[in-house]
Length: 271
Image (cartoon, rainbow, N blue to C red; front, side, top):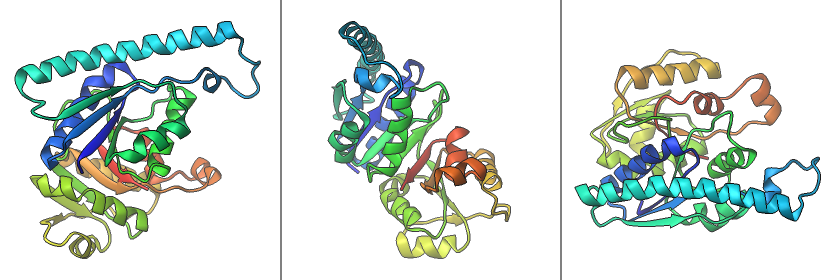
């Protein structure tokens, strides 16, 4: 795990996302942190049923997107200056990126080229492109994603809880998280057959099995995981990213969906 891409959205979350990305990379011996403020193409800001954009509309939207990206860059610059002054940055390479780009091209051109994606939890007031970017990062990039809650200013990846489920997605997630787990101070694991599974997947890793309430309902599983993290002072939850059909999620929900809608702790996941 040498490179990470931090995808920015809300100004108030910039410092937390950058600090989390840098902290994880430094812990695992990473070398390069790229920071992305993806400006939305004008056509991506309207619904298919809306009228065609005029040249004036396009110019206005592009100006708004540029103002948004410039604002994020200001926060990034302030963070960079501080990190260089206090030595936090070390010899880490940093790159600023602010292209006008669609979600599909974003994933293909940037997200699929790094070892880790760092992003904020989705919020109800996010634009459609930002929500699609979150979903694409999980399900289309083939890369692990680290979600950081709004306002998070604690450590990341020092005290980790592994949530085991016997799926291909969970196996991939655990394997991808290995560099972070090796650098962590404490690692706990929960789930049926979790200890033996970790022993096979991650030989040599020292983990402590813990128990959660035995309930298969997604909302109860999510609540139990959050409770374990909160009560035991965990600063990262590692779990697979599971996709069901849209109708299923609307009626029943899924653990992934519930966890993403209730940001309490950094979550590392991979589909």
